[in-house]
Image (cartoon, rainbow, N blue to C red; front, side):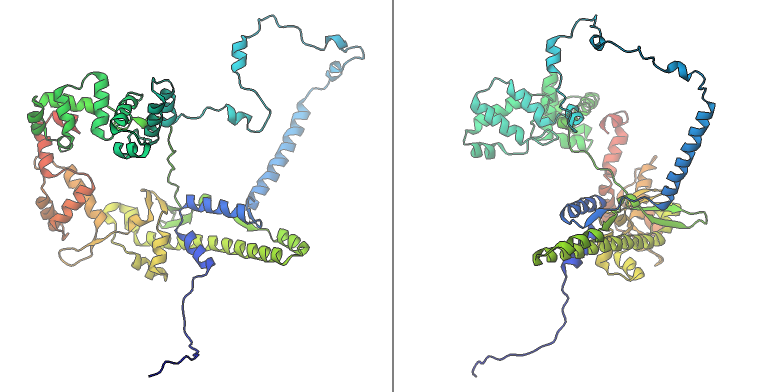
Length: 502
């Protein structure tokens, strides 16, 4: 059979994501901080975009009212003023200073020390003069480099020390292998190790450690408390984490009371010495949605207007520039900027409406949680919300990512309300996994004489109608960082040592 070439026309359908659609999807999944950063970039890039800084009209009326009040206050003040002695304040023709007397009299106090004056910052009259005088928080790296500048090291060792300081994170730990650094610098491993010993002698004590045990050992050596018993304890921090006092006593050669004192001393140390210095500020969580209870007892959902960028398209500027543009490329650029600006404003409005729609449905589904607490949290999936508001499941997933809601019970991420379902014993309504975790936590917190094992917790939950496996209870307990029943029993048996170990 011979192969031939021919042309065919076929009609088909395909979904193509335009750049505008990709932008809308991207905006939907951004957090409020990321959205603010993105909008700032668009304001710099697009000359037709501008920030809407107009205040509501009601505020204009308040300004007019305040202006009227100011006028009334002025008239009232003038009516109370006594102007009968005003003519005594006038200056006579001869009441002038001679030209030689315009300078101030010499100061009787001695001049300031020139060394003090020399150290004062010069005032250049610029806008950033005040910012230049403000003290900046010293970072850990700056503090270590200042100590390196006065350390008695050779130029080669000083270079190695600088490389080690660069590899120290903000917590104070060395985050590079010594052999890797030695290979990179082309120096023997022993020389890098010797320089590390010098760096570990810098302040704060414990800096440059490669793990927690070395950090604690450096601080104990500086205090002179790193005896053989303490060295054995530091070598078995896993037993400290498990509260195994008997095992620690056997390895350290001391009794349980001494173990408690040693653990108390360890707890007084600083596990992350570098955090005392300047670091990146922690961004607080700003809710995107507020939920408040109305007078009628219903829950009202509203967007946080502070997190919503307000933009305007400057059509007047576009018409002015477009009328004077003669180049085709310039006109195409202006048209592209106009379309991009209009689409961004429309996308931001659609994003806000979608967030409000999804949040309102979540509140409707989880009204029991808002009224009674976590025990009444219902199992909820993305598909349930998507079907209720006629949206795609992926859209709901993007909306609930990195978005927070402020409720009377606290601030939660929207994804917090989507929990797995745990079946009930009698086939009734399922239980939320978060509600079951709260039950497990309460059972363990209320332990009195009996220490509940995982099997015992399963039996109690089954009696309450929750069909759950023992491995699931263990997984929930470990996720909440609750010790096992054996460790909790050991803590209870040690009695006075419990406080010291926790």
